[in-house]
Image (cartoon, rainbow, N blue to C red; front, side):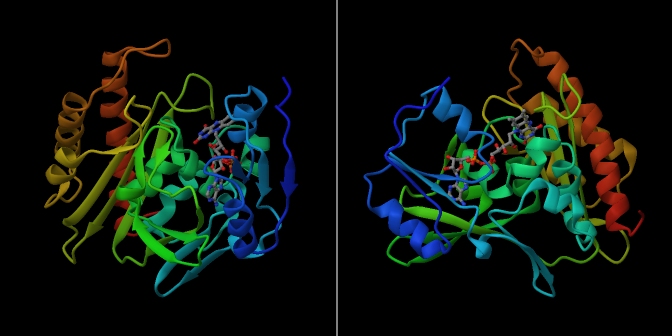
Length: 293
Ligand SMILES: Cc1cc2nc3c(=O)[nH]c(=O)nc-3n(C[C@H](O)[C@H](O)[C@H](O)COP(=O)(O)OP(=O)(O)OC[C@H]3O[C@@H](n4cnc5c(N)ncnc54)[C@H](O)[C@@H]3O)c2cc1C
């Protein structure tokens, strides 16, 4: 399949130049190209017919993972393989590695980016759900130079929809530093390392006695897209990660969510995956928060 005619292809070296080009075209007629792992399929099938493609791969300020006392900043063009290779990820954000190391195949991991995945926000993608459970802050730059920060809970609206304006670029995702905190992500797909039928991400913070003081749980693979599971989060708070309480939390989540039946799995199967994956993931997140490997 061949794309429709693309009038202009540009490779800016700064984010300012990138949003400047974006502003020369009416909304949606110019698009960003990150790893191309989703958008190129849409362009080749002519679901998208952009007049201009703005390739972000030469913008060095969008790359790199910075870990310091404030937390972690991942540039929007950080690829899955960069996350997998990052040796400094603290246990609070270990779920990023869990997710990135099983996205697609090696080619997809070498090209696909965290920014592209979150901006595309496909319902079964691993990274939007992971960033959601980890409570990331999305950093955006508008064409007129205005910068804004947005909680990921507000950024992810629904499948293939975000709160990013047509005139904005996602520059980075920031995660606050957190102590006695652990996270984990796991998915199950019909093929190894393929898009998940269901994915579960958990982040827990513990007090000095090892009891949970804050929990965030998210799910991927459901029809409504990446979503939190507040009912289960409440059950985990106050616990020390006892198996019975974790099982109770995920049994409640499986009952409460709208798990669709489709060609890949029926509703009951998805609910069972939520219970099984949830127990494993939450147990690992508690262990990481306690400093276990
Ligand atoms: C074979 C295959 C298997 C896959 N398996 C998985 C899987 O197991 N798990 C999973 O999570 N995903 C999977 N994917 C999807 C993959 O994760 C994509 O990489 C991801 O969805 C898009 O990231 P990208 O960098 O390629 O973005 P692109 O496709 O380049 O862009 C996606 C969208 O985001 C916009 N965009 C990109 N960057 C920015 C930015 N900085 N600011 C504003 N807008 C931006 C683009 O304009 C476009 O609309 C798979 C894909 C393939 C082809």
